[in-house]
Length: 216
Image (tube, rainbow, N blue to C red; front, side):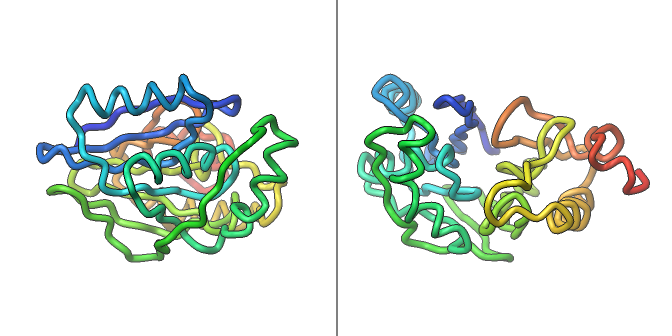
């Protein structure tokens, strides 16, 4: 059974997740840790729990979600994994960082690509990858069918959805992917978003104001 711990990092309040099971192998998802105290917080937790990081995953490559990617990659000798559709966000991250207060941001290109139908395995656990662009090119969601949850990045939030006014955003595509790839999951599946509190598929299907016209 997977265990999950959420950290909230950097000025954008990004949710960084660590997932692990009884083997103590863990996956780090959306490493937003920027600055010494945030880096100490996540490494301290990993040490305290006796975890072994084996996967470094990004749901998408916006700057707030990759602020700690280079640090985690070096710290644990991990190859970052993401959908390459968002690679230009990484290539432009250093310049973008100065605009948003990430001075001195280090970046590293993902070394492995994630695509629709991939399965991320670590320990005795696995996450299914579904492609969900609309908020940004290269967005993916990660589904644990065994433990009945989905990590949605910036696709679906508690009573909200990802913004689509940034480069490569597309509102119609985002709604299509939410409808076809997330709301088709069982309604008891928990949703762990890239920002804000957790929710469930069922609650969002019936209560999210952006999805009210979908007939739920």
